[in-house]
Amino acid sequence: MGNILAIANKEIKGYFASPVAYIVIGFAAILFGWFFVNLLYYFEQASMQAGSGFQGPQAVNVNEMLISPLFLNVAVILLFTLPLVTMRTYSEEKRSGTIELLLTSPLTDVQIVIGKFLGGLVLYAAMLSVTVVHLAFLFIFGNPEWRPVLTGYLGLLLMGGCFLSLGLFVSSLTKNQIVAGMVTFAVFLLFWVINWFASFAGPTTQAVLNYLSITEHLNDFARGVIDTKHLVYYVSFIGFSLFLTVRAVDSERWRG
Amino acid sequence: MIEVQHLTKRYGPTTAVDDISFRVEPGEILGFLGPNGAGKTTTMRVITGYMPPTEGTALVAGYDVATHPIEAKRRTGYLPETPPLYPDMTVGDYLAFVAAIKGVPRRERKSRVQEVMKRTAVADMSNRHCSKLSKGYKQRVGLAQAIIHNPDVLILDEPTSGLDVKQRSETRQLIKDLGGDHTVILSSHILSEVSQTCQRVVIINRGRVVAVDTPDNLTSRLRGEETLFLQVDTRGADARPVLEAITGVRHISPSDVKGDLVSYEIGSDPGRDIRRELASTVVNHGWGLLEMRPLRMSLEQIFLELTEKEGVPETPDGEPQSAGTGGEEETVHG
Ligand SMILES: Nc1ncnc2c1ncn2[C@@H]1O[C@H](COP(=O)(O)OP(=O)(O)OP(=O)(O)O)[C@@H](O)[C@H]1O
Ligand SMILES: [Mg+2]
Image 1 (cartoon, each protein chain N blue to C red):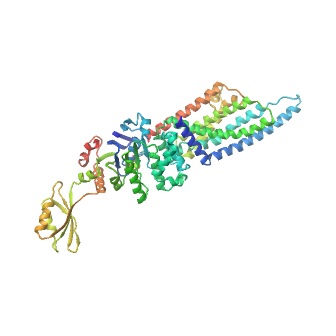
Image 2: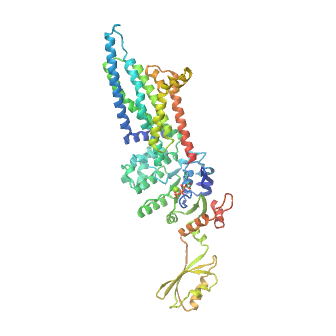
């Protein structure tokens, strides 16, 4: 455990010693703010219409109309920011030769991978914490439900974990961090658009593709539902990606 | 303390290290000498557990690095060819991080960091980012990193490369001080380096051990031909034909004349001591014998000789090595 934390700590310090952390957090803050303002605008319109609608007053739910779509939009932010977080993790260690230090220290490959993953997760959590500020306004001026907000954040953390673990794996395959970043972005994009393809497919394929889509599993979390099906998906996705990363590091060792 | 047995490492079709065996006793400083591409770095990477061997084993403090990597690595300090520094970290933070992953207990980390910084003379840079260090400092921080957990075994890959003369001799001294408490393997292709620091030298070329011995023994063993330095006062006479007539003399190098004094370098058959005959001949001719001493071949020459002999006949796999080097085999394991 101490070893994992030592690696995680090093990663986090590395993010904040370089521009990466500030770029990622700043970019997330701007995009999220933009989504927030837009959705707030639609929400206002909707509630005004609802208030003066022909069908009479109608309850407009802040959670359903604003917070839940907001969470779903975060996937877009992750698409652009998380490749920046993971692209350096292994690539840079390989390029600069510091991987020799890690691999000749009394650490297991699993400890190194988990440490790096946790480091990325902490930066991601810091990025998410920016969004808490926006939501705080809603709690000050409105009366949303707590539960969907908490499960939404849990879902976001898990979804981000999937992206991070995937990015870590891609980074372990190359010395070049730019290549790692681009490939990671492409792979994220694939997992992101997979359910668009699903809408053109037959029912069985559709079910399979929907199940594979990382973002699809967020819907229930954003609605306040914790379904084991989705939990299992996210956790096993992360576990499998990290496993692949360990294998990649190990096979690189054999090849030299 | 370190035992390498029949180690072979292949990168795809290229064989970088080919059936190498040697031992390093506790407290010994072993020099690992070879030209570029000889397989020094590869051997060290296997011993440190960075990569597994294709065949054979490496034991560190009795632990097989392939089967007990954590135990072996705990006892090993390693300075790779390029010091593994994180550019964004300060020297102090970096060493504290290395202490943590090398298993130094939290309580002792601070004092260990201070101690190794003092020992490697980098304390004045403790708040400087690693990316902003000069080459010499980088190398020394790399060394500090290698000794931070006080390992039994130190593997240093070209620890003095890129240093100026003063830093080089300081580093050599530091390594000598470390020997005794630590078992050290250091690689180099600078011969004087190795002969000044090490008690024993392993010379490798093209992935094979060519010789293992003390620097002194290597010198005498390789003196296939004895060479004598002779200075005489012949009062103008030419001594060469006279000297050439002595049995056992193979050749005489061009003489160096300073006034009446003439110096020769005389090569003789191996194993034959011609000093008595030389002396009596000179004296019988009424010349003055001013100086006569055996010339020892520098390690540099040995090295060239060794590697060239090995290089000429391309021995196919399985065939015994060429005659010039076959005799070294028994010392490999000693
Ligand atoms: N990762 C690798 N992949 C393929 N071949 C390699 C690899 N590393 C080294 N080699 C080859 O293995 C051989 C031995 O290389 P090694 O780096 O061990 O030599 P060295 O003695 O350390 O040389 P130098 O003095 O230049 O550092 C060389 O022929 C080299 O080209
Ligand atoms: Mg080398």
